Length: 430
Image (tube, rainbow, N blue to C red; front, side, top):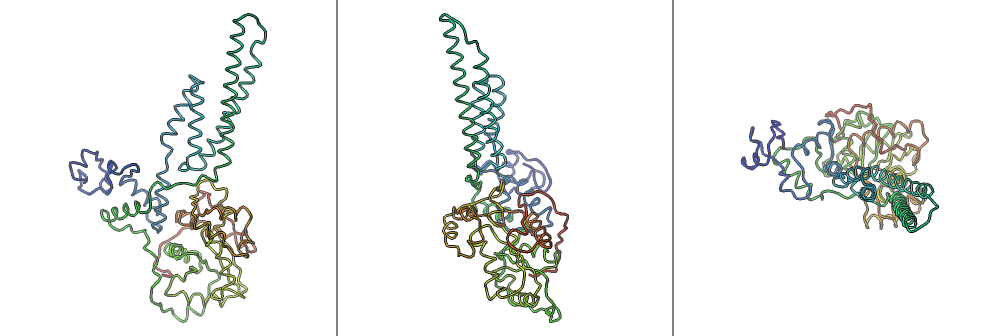
């Protein structure tokens, strides 16, 4: 394992002889993989995760974003992938052993919740391809075999041909069935976490104890700040748009990454963040009848009520002429997702069953069913960079739309990079 300070490679003997310190510079190692049980990480792994998530320290992130990010990095196909490669080679040499083993390996990968959905789907399709090939081969083999003969020798030969045909057809049908079955049930295979929140918190505390505070890591949003005075000349103006988040954490993330400055808009949470200037900013917003409001929320029963709350609450924009756009996340945005962290809980299912009539009316039948199954996706499962891209693109698209839930839909799984540059400046709302 390399030391993150001096890049010197230290093997287990070196680390043990130096009491867990680098043999060159003496810097302590935060993690010792050989004592970590099933899930192992190294100091370079953790350091790279922080660097990649923060885009080399230029973007702030929340602890939960780092938790999601590390879990995604820890996903591995491991032995199943090695078994698949071995079976593929063996099937070319000894087909009657290698092909069943290859089918088993593909099924195992397609059935693993920890494997990215794109790879699971690919293996489910491969099972169908194998099944179709075997069925075609079995039929062609039967029809191309001799059909005439006599004597006991020919009878034995006939039964061998029939046995080979039967085995090929049966294996092909099994592979085809498994492929179709696995492809249909991909949406029900929810990813599991490689590490628990408590385990992650222990790792993070250990890392900061050894290496100091992680600068881009945001603290919990401070909801108890005393009111902050704002220059009266500033309060005489208003914003043309505001992003309202369903949690203080997401509002804090946008503000910390200077989103409001780059996009010339206010950022608030439905819970009243940032506490010190929330009421003043909201009063400024209400004075603008042409205000554009952008709702940003989790794909969850609680999150999708945000639009209705903004429309009907006297604390927000009831009886107002403002235009409200739904940036998502909505269930329709993630129903057919391949790589998102879709979770499920009984509490979420119960909350979905208690949604109001007005909220349910704006949902598709499959969306409501998805929510009633307890499914949800959190905004914090996205990296800061991707989340900033989604919100920025949504606001840009709203300029050519008329408002509503579908009007600013963004492909949440797109890996396209944004041309926007986000600077961390001292000018912020909190």
